[in-house]
Image (cartoon, rainbow, N blue to C red; front, side, top):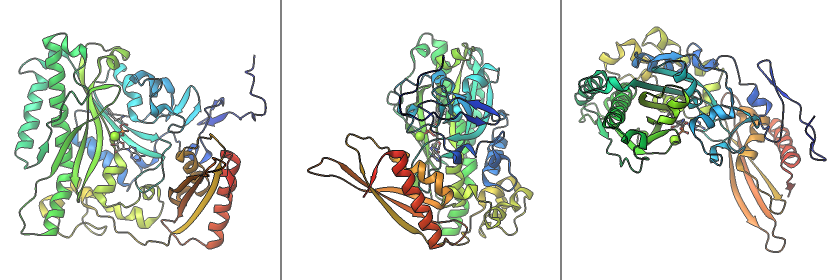
Length: 465
Ligand code: FA5
Ligand code: MG
């Protein structure tokens, strides 16, 4: 029996992604512009001369004990993305305003953590998985609906946590390396605020010891990663600013966070070029996650880091849209790095020769040289909302992005009021149109803005004013 559609609702056609058909329902919300990004292999992670591919490869080299796992296709069961990780049914991340759904059962992964259970279940103990992830989000310089995360994890059998065992030895080696590096680390987090230790970790002294050692190993690993990723860049910046000034240490801080599948849960921030940058979320993997993966005896940690955010800061890339640019003026700036050459391409002139002579670190020292800033074109769109009508800013952003693609630099709610007599609400959004690569013509923008306005009216049931 076919489900009965509510009267008046148009039947949506099924969606085809990479040759598979997905029946549509009331959750279906993936526009064509997002579907077009889905590929069997995430292109930017393996493109030659791309900063994201270089960063992925660099981190893989820095964590040689971890097996890189190829990225699975981005279409996943909702239960894999959320359920297997213990996300409650009412978690805000599950809302269709935040997640792309092909239908109620299938979505585009919102994070690489979606694959934790299956990778642990396949028997991998120390692994990395880098992939494209998708989120319905606002539009600005650091948010893009498609971005890239790297998941990393390490789990061990209880036996490995014994005094003098492999985990403790590795902790000591990592800590010795960090102690000599002159890096400033604030990791005195209130662990109760970070979710505390889970009951399973308290049941035996062995479990408690394994969980505490896991956290110590996680801290050592990620502090080492921050030092290796940001240290050379930081040293070059310090040298360029004041060659004789006292060397400021790299500064890393740990703060309490909350994720449904780790406890304690933490985030790491790095003080970089004058501000704190959140680079990742992480924690001690919950027993339940490993039970779901049928490896109940193991204990360990996981992290998920945002590659674009790290690359933007490392290379001074001002807008997240640039990662998708096909423009040679962008790509050529990263071209020499793979060859290990220090010729053109913006290597800092002050980079210490000891760093530049290590080909792997040359990638970290490229500073993006903006080739041009084309003029912005601001246009407002104002409308009335039907009474008691809920409109999410992400819904407006979605239609703008679907029509304007990368010509939309930002979408911002700039004004909102309720009519005192009718009780109707009015909103005004400001759209900033600007290309990264060329000048836009007035006619082109007017026609584009007109199409967007028509779609907002038709699809969001609003009344233009
Ligand atoms: C997560 O996605 C968790 N899965 C991380 C994790 C893994 C926790 C394993 C515990 C164990 P979060 O939503 O904070 O967490 O995203 C992680 C990183 O992705 C952020 O620190 C940020 O660097 C990046 N990020 C998040 N949203 C965007 C976006 N719209 N555009 C670009 N980067 C983003
Ligand atoms: Mg976060």
